[in-house]
Image 1 (cartoon, rainbow, N blue to C red):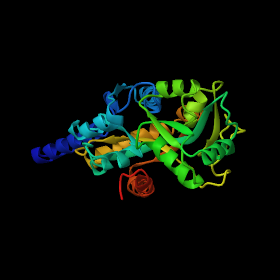
Image 2: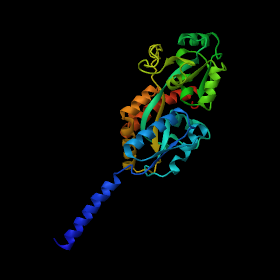
Image 3: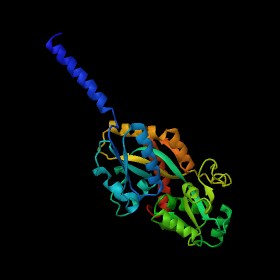
Image 4: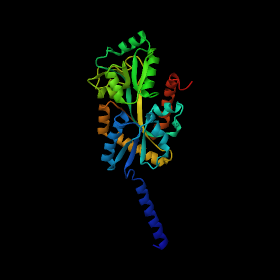
Length: 316
């Protein structure tokens, strides 16, 4: 073998080695930015995912809470973050579709690059145990008798809870009053203190507050095992299976191949049987929406949300 052949072989071996190194993702800690305060559904899910990540990849997933403006602070800064796959950001629907319709929002929906959606928390109407509303029909009847007298607490304005309240009013032809809260703690105190009639929240809240609160209806395909006596909205005559979707996104500078690696990594974590069990027990509905399915999924969700945006006065 002459010197040229030896050199070519050495280059080939080096190329293979480098290719293997490049595909060792993730081979160092990943920073996971959550645009909300600790203790909420996004934070709970991220910390569970971090446990599974460490067990699977023997690396640390560092959850960093960056709350502000209902998530908009982190999302407006997202594209200034490193696009190397080692900084990922929690993304939520309908937030990233509806927020940019508000004046003053510092990002647009097109600025966000989702690569995976792993679950949604089903919309649910929740009341205190001592509420006079024993059924969904009781609440609707009261809202019809006294328009706007029934108040529904929710997390944030132009959020998933707000969209759900607007949808309830539209489908039942009633007028309720939406009362936005910044955090779950204040919302819970308001319900238990009788300051609001009910909450348009999620099944996760009903599970966390079981014994103190009751759920009147939930937006799932089938009744939840934790609440076998609670009807779905579908059973109540509404084609309503929905909630707040959660996923991860990356900065726009992230190369396509790296986006795929992040999506595959999240998919592997999401399909861990233990994680799925714990998610389901916590009231989350698990989804597996990977990179290839994101464009169609986002287009479908955006169409639905824009209908609600009209009712919220965000668009004409």
